[in-house]
Length: 314
Image (cartoon, rainbow, N blue to C red):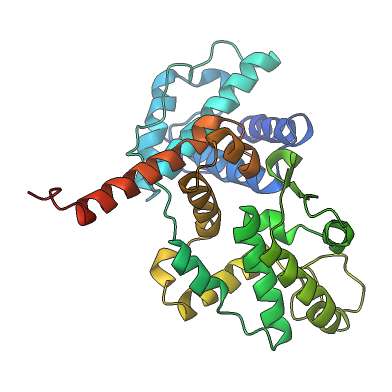
């Protein structure tokens, strides 16, 4: 066994796969970085077993990776994601002609208990969205961010990637049905409606808030949402805004970066929206991913029945 650095052959093998993900599959930088982290753990696992050449990897060694990853303290979902990354690496080698048989072909990610996404009630969302102080510049920005997250169901990364021009086109069009273009995973575009509350919050930010922060920058930034120095608001800073709002609303233990996205989807389906429409709005590649929100609403129905029906607890 070895505990040193992975061999040049192993690292070059993984890098070729990562280049493929960027150039040919067009995956986002965040997704590629997740692959990089998972595959770095895989190379550590192989190196500990004394493997230096990709062609020498066995199915047993691939199978053992899940246990190794779990031993690092990774959550079951993270272990499953890492195993999927490893399967993708080996499959690429076979398809690319650089590998022989696929030792990961019969390796399956560990089964996980299905976790339903946590959605806030409509009342709680209203409380959360009301927390920013609209009399301050940063409060106007935070209000625009939160209204956009809930009003479009977008990921935080999709909102912070927006430029001013993306919104001015929508706000200046007299047709209220003109949607906002979002760039999702793999740079795939989708168009989502922009509701009245989000429009008003963004308009207030652009007119009364953004100019004040933009004036602090040494160089003009096209970003819609700005930080205190006048540069583009980062994903981490946007998450910090959401966390502060959750604290102020008394919802700190119930909010994650995707909470408003989950709430958006759940409230749409609760309101009668077709699951395939919600799939398009969320930018899911498969409707199977979206169908989990139908389970949330069934769960909600059971809860309401259990607490409200006079014979539910007889």
